[in-house]
Image (cartoon, rainbow over all chains, first blue to last red):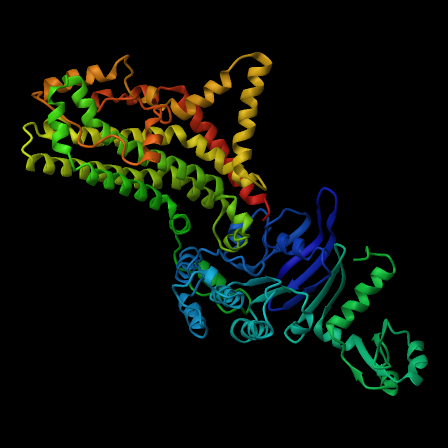
Length: 291
Length: 348
């Protein structure tokens, strides 16, 4: 059974269409990066998955309709909607008590063990913690919940590099296993590239690219080419071209690896470069309004 | 058993950790108390002021009591009861203000600071959340204020008894003042005012859950505008009277109303107690701002000098007041809308 199964998912507000018929299947045990520009519909899609907003079309999360069966679903689904949504008045000990009191799958010892590795004091209030510590606290609470689906919407926004790295390392090492599914949205795609198993680009309310990371690596290639070989590279129909230090970097989709190797060193492109290529091209073709 | 064995065979997943029992409502109430400490701190602070006034009143208490020996019995009881009613009134009014402020922010602040996204990430339904929130002003706060008021009244009673006894004042207070009756009337009025105010609380909660900004204005101005419109358009004041009764009408409906409550009470008192001189235990004004609030008799609709006798309680009349049941039905509708709003309104 797919963890998330969306077919023709649509959500329209009064003046705008936030989701324009999305099809998305996420199998159990995957880590999906949902990447898109601002206003592309990422948060709306996540809100629909989490039962925070109504929708049209078909959507099942862990076999349930998230809008009509939200109360039951939330025992198996967890999310960090944003940084800094922990109530500022709350004490760390109260957060542990409360989550332990209402969540049937919360393992307090696990949360305590994680907090012991931080500088967070049990009697501090959230408002007294630094932004990074608040994120650590939230992660400690979430990781101690034995959820089947974890949704992270910009979980590291505004955190410094050290906290961001620690956040994802902890998530991958101490939390993730093959029984869990994680969906992440972030603008800092380069930081999550190595942890993803799947990738989806969303733009203008539509999924414009969906791929597993294995397929991504097999399909896309990037070659840095000296100026004299640029014309030859262009003949192989790159999907994107950019200039760095007087050389051209070409991004190819399903090109012959043998021919590419003749032009220069072939690498797997970063998600960020592919993102610019795909979304940027859409903007250039006028398929989406320019930012 | 069948259930768990089904789960074990379900795919290759490791069996989920054992579920432990949860008490979402209990913890939701606890969480409201954590967040809204004014629910108990404000009544405590006001009662502390009342007690400070009591201590100050020790000076000259005996002389004042002796002076009133010469007053007619009707005035004696009124003066003795006054400070107790003042304590009752000031804590109750504080409770009412705290309740309104609480209700207004209950579904508003969590959207404003986006913490609603955290609450909604946990398996606590919107129904549970809203019921826990309306539980605070309708059950938790009245219990808090009831305990505080009775404790303060007993402290006042004990203290004045000691002070008067030391000074050898001939007529002890307990002969004049049936303190247990007074406590019971206090608790009764707490129950009926709470029941009477439920629609107000629910209204403020609903508007807080709906409005994007300034919930107080949204809660107050439209009804005020409707009252004004009715007056201008039809030159009638039905709505004004209806809303006014909702604020101040509860005592008329929950107590025996007679033209002169004091007289009947005193008649009873003079029969019960052996009627000798009496003086007030406290000088009436304790702290100016509070005494001002308590002195406005219309606020709780308390008769200026209402009875202290259990005989004045008329619960049957209160229960047969249509306004009570209509108000509760309206409150239920407001609460249902609040649940609906909690489900659908997005963070601000």
